[in-house]
Length: 382
Image (cartoon, rainbow, N blue to C red; front, top):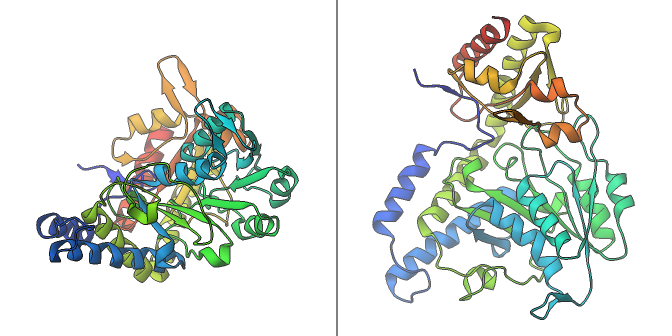
C-alpha cells in the first residue's frame, strides 16, 4: 500500500495541471526568450505571463519578480547582496562592515548565508523566540544597530508552522531605513500574502512548496531596492540573475501561483479542518502523551507538529510505514541531533525527541487522516 503523504512542508507533489503545462512547454516552446524571432517571442510571452501570475499571488508588480533556481538561491541573494554590496578588492576589504539580524528558527537557506557573512567579518545578531516559536518585534527593535543593513525573519516556520508578526517587524525596519526580507516559501498558497501590507522589501518563494517543480523559485525585490547580482553573466532577470531562463518551469510556477490564488479562499479552511481533525484523533486517544508544538492558533493551516512523550519520533516513523512524515530531530547511529527549532523554543529533550511534523495538503483526504491517525496511535500504544 502506498504511504499516506503527510510531508507537504518538505515538498509537494506536482499538480497534474502543472505537470501537463510543463510537458507542453518542453515540447512546444523551445525558443530562447532573448531571441527576436517568433519562437523567442513565444517563450518570452510565457515568462511575462508567469511573472504576472506570481506577482498577483503576493500583491507585487510584475517588474519586481525575479525568477531563480529555487528558494535557497533566492534567500542567498536576499541575504548576501545587501551586505556584499560594499565589497572592495580581491582580499575581501569592505567599505563598511554591515550588521544583519535573523531569528533563531530560520531555515538553513537563511541562517547559513548569514553565518557565512559573519565568517567574513560582518556582524550578526540572532534573536530568540518564545515557547510557541514566535519572534517578539521588540527584540528585533532592540537588536538594531547604527550599521544594521538587513533584517530577515521567516513568514512562517517550516517545522511548527508558527506565523510571525511580519507587518510589525517590517514597520520597524522601514521606519529606520533597513532592508527587510522574509522567507515565505511555506506560506505561499496557504495564507494570503501582500508584500505592501506586510511592509517587506524582499520575499522568497519556492516552487516545490506549492505544487510546482523543484529547481524554480522567486525573489520578490521592491523596485526601489538596488542590489548587485550574485550570478554574473548576461543581463537576464533585470540583470539580477544571469542564465537563460527555464521557460517550462517558469511557466509551471506561473500556473501553480494562479491555481493557488484561485483556490486560496476554500483551500485554507479545508486544510485547517484536516489538520484539526488529525489533532483531535491523536489527542482524544493519547491524552497527555501527546502535546502540541508551535502556536495554538497563529500557525499555518496545514501544519501539526506534535510530540509523543516517551517515544522517539524517528522510531515511530520506522514502525509506521503507512505514514510518510518528518521529524525535526535526526538519529545517526549513536548520535541524536535535536531539532534546532524546538531547542530554540526551549523544548526539553523528551519533547524534542518525540516530535513529528504532520503536514497536509491539496491531495489529502479525511479518510487518509483517519487511517494515518490510527496507525500512529497503534504504534505509540503498542
